[in-house]
Image (cartoon, rainbow over all chains, first blue to last red; front, side, top):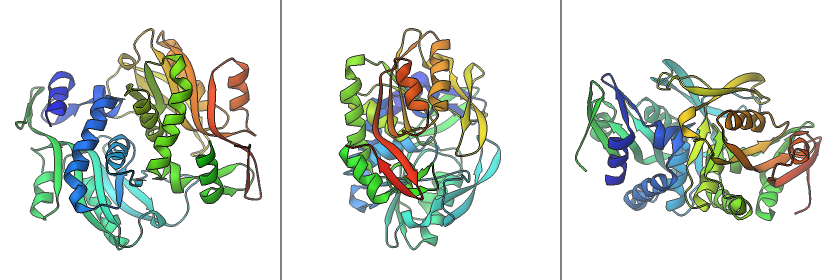
Length: 192
Length: 192
């Protein structure tokens, strides 16, 4: 997606070999115009899958999930939580996910009532690296008798294995931008 | 706001004297149509304040902030983070906030570059209780030479002190729904 590639080129900051900071427009400060254009692009691609629900994981997936769900005709959005809280019910489906950002494993959790049996679930997340979050969300969806009908990603790290694994498993994966490599802070993108 | 009051009456679950769960439509599963109607209502009220930026705190404030910012002509959204992460820069403005949901104090943090001096900041959050989050966000905004031009809230707990304190201090506060009381699980709303 050209506008996203342009934003990554202009504002993205690469660090070392695999960290890219997009704080300026995607996951700390949000460029709302770009966000809704990204949501529109994902909706155009996934409409044919007839999703009934959008699923993401807090916190930085929420904005893109909401934008995509709005463009898909205001589908409901469910976001998995990363911690237990006093206002949650006891009936949560859980899966372990490794957070590379926080260097730890977390149990993500979704209230079972919010993914009805037979749902066609579109998973949305801001980043795809090793695919740990998408894997955890998929396990939760399938454990509840629902089906993942697509995975929509803002930025895929093409040099990590998550995207390849998903494509090989036959998942309909769309990444709006793919980073081919980061070398000494220089970000190289797949062509738009 | 009638549609929000209706959703609280239909799906909200009161517990004890001060917990209201709106997981079903606002902060775990999101009713996207209602969310954007709420954003539109906040935008209609705050347009006159000419905000240049929307500020919220992760995670459950993000969806409403994005919807309001979209209705205000795609203003940028900044969300304060609740934990340090390896991909954050060192230059963060911080403030302590008490989380009643998690029963602990957290340091919320915002990258200083994302609230330019002179910004007119609209603070958005899903809930207002004692006003701890709004207070922390306000301290951050003012420490950066910017100004809070309004506070837009999804659901105010009218029986806690946050709303009264803000109104007395002259802040332009709009709460889309106000809960007057919760008694033995029964939620009483101020009239819509």
